[in-house]
Length: 343
Image (cartoon, rainbow, N blue to C red; front, side, top):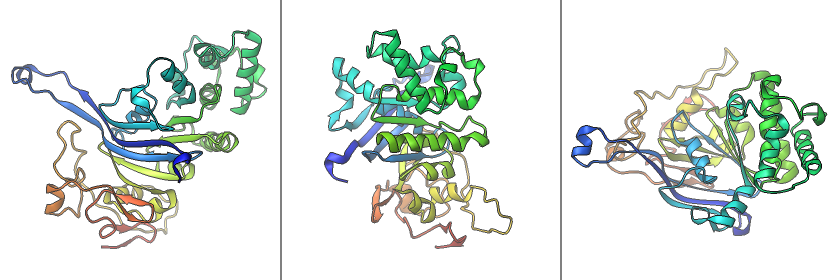
């Protein structure tokens, strides 16, 4: 990917949330922080979908919110077309917000129950002063609804959220996200709250919108199978850090990090004759307040060695385009495609 093709260049991104100190901590003047995002680095090319996958609480949503400046970063750099997003203010920040949008996880919560569909989808147009004409605004809203597969659009304009199905609500949320013609969208688990029967339709809609508008997207999910279907590359996140990053098929068929292997072997296969190995991780997710020394995964890793407890591994390129944050990446674990232990 050449420099002019890059949309996002993120380096060392960090977000700490300060905790309210208890009585004794306040006496000792000791501040504690939740390490929500911990030195995350990645690039996203024009028209690419980068999948961000991991268990609940790993920092996926916070990463997406940081990119959109819905949260202020504690450290690191976020460059959007070479512009330092963290430093944007005033008109420059307003112009940036017009180019980036978010599709939230729960359409039941993200839509104002007092707003009609017209009010909801038109709100970004009003905020950014795109048009003052009600007729033109209605035309733009109808176009967005039709692109989101709500046809005929005029039949949905003056309905309220409670009059829509779950799939229709999420399509309204998608219409709201694309009405300004953004370059980049954060899709935060956009199908996790939908019935299985309509998930594929919404996923295919997002892929079609990507093809039509060359949209760049960060697709956040805890579901590896969904992320594989949607993404060009997958970043696996654990305790606020990216522990593996590669093309979707490489991550699924040739995982190098023990945590990625554990995620993949937990995905059910609808074939009673299929057998594969199990990545035997144990214990609970460590506290994001008091991170373990060395490799963050070592307390749960069955292959941990003394160096894992003492030295933090780097996210390094183990194979062409395949990065992993593990001292022994590719040397230990499971071959998830054949169910045979590789080390």
